[in-house]
Length: 168
Image (cartoon, rainbow, N blue to C red; front, side):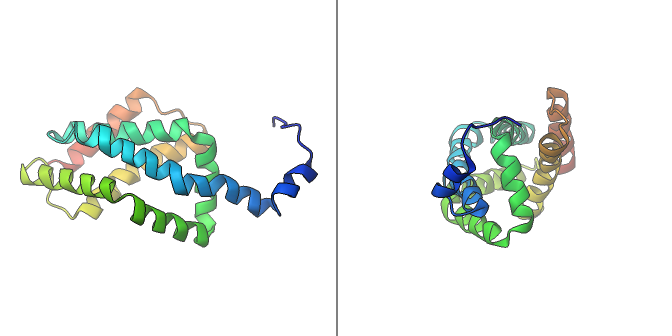
């Protein structure tokens, strides 16, 4: 493991304990990184890919995988903490609900448009998103915790599989 050449005493003069240090890493992720990247995704990707189901799913999958691979170290810590820290989950859920309304609205608009144009199954939007995030989550977890690379081939198969599963 790389060394930061910082004495442990110096670290704990700034942070009371390991939990304080961890919170200093995780809280900015909740407060800024997720909302900013979701906003960028909403602004740049959703609006440009809303006419075809395959393009819409492709934009979502590629963008989220790109986000995770660019932020892998922080994401490993964040996901590991979310697994057992209910206060962190509650803070994340609250932050997500209060700062990502545009993202949620954009996704909902696109899903409703795809259903209205008979391109997508007429399921409830949370069910559709759960299916998408389940597959994407599997790729991400394999990458983060089992060192399995996510190739263009993997992404293409994920997009094709989701498109087929969600097509009308």
